[in-house]
Image (cartoon, rainbow, N blue to C red; front, side):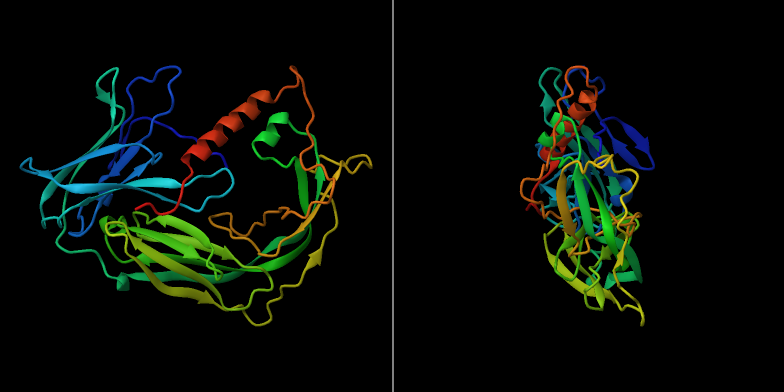
Length: 368
């Protein structure tokens, strides 16, 4: 799934984000910053100001003042998070932590700016908000709990076949294997779905990053906690995995970097649940290679040995993929030169540009 970076001004529901008033025709997209008043109001006394960023490699300036105009001292960090999948990149948030705890029931203002545009003397990006602190520190670990934990099965391919197909020359450059792959054997995969919830206001929830892992310690979800104080995940295990099936979780306090582990959410497969493989050796109609008796260049088959991790509303629908196993001499990327009138070059260049953005926005782990 390709994501597009949109820069502009949005004023709705307590969200304030600003962009350049006038974009130059050939200018690069500028970074964006968003402050949500809902995530600031009632700030815990040991909390931090957290704002979402379009990307995290810029030098942001943060100014925080009391109601009387006195500047508050503090430190700024940019934190990246997210489990990177194909065509996706890690997200970023700005975390500003005061050197001393906030005063209870006091009003503060925050201004976040990107460095000045030297041609106009104006900041490239600017966001500001005012808020009033609460009366207590952050909630304890006891405020976290798993809810709506369920077991299900999702049918997925356990073995696939592939054949090489024609594609644009540019496709190989951005990583396409130029192959059509389809499942030939399928099996139900044990799946655990659960939601981590914190019993605290939105300003408290904004103080945490949540990482949910499978039984092998592989991260499935890493997210900044939502305003509603929830983070959900669906973990798909391989058919031969032993019951119980668990979602393991680590929570990080953004203000301090402290990480703690919560009790996992586990489910058992109901008695009599079958994970038996079923063979469906029939080539789908959408396969574009190997027509008219021509196998199009066999690039081998693959086995799904890990079951795969699935997250979100489409969990369990069953992505069919080739885990490798290419035969020697197979055409992993069969390229056909379409020439100047071949068409399709435009979309290929747009994809290349998007992938360049993805590579630029990708990043390392928790930055402190």
